[in-house]
Length: 125
Image 1 (tube, rainbow, N blue to C red):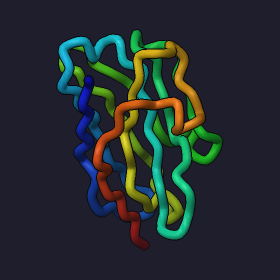
Image 2: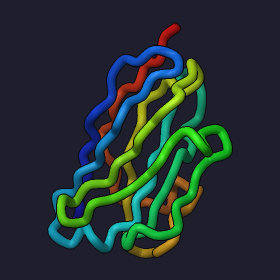
Image 3: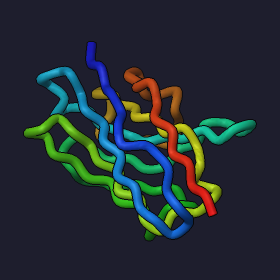
Image 4: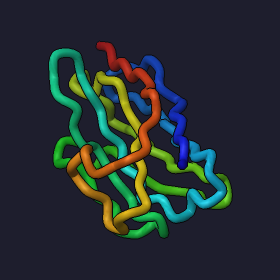
């Protein structure tokens, strides 16, 4: 049973940057395909970005493509989401999700078994 924990959320201005981290507790975390999701107030949770366990197959939602970058450091059991060019609509609670049943990241949140508690990202003008 893997556990994942997010950190790095906070307050940023429009056009600014934030860096989110997702750390896995399991020593087999290098086999976890990981995705980032977000949920804004009054909206459904949506896929943001995902990455295969071996660092391949980066996948991005159109709304963040070109602004966000997902990467991983398996030695540190960490998946990073670098967010640049932040917009007001990026304000949300960001969740890290992981699974080892599939290699390529998936859009559907229901396919991920392991979830973090979320970290708040607030973008202000």
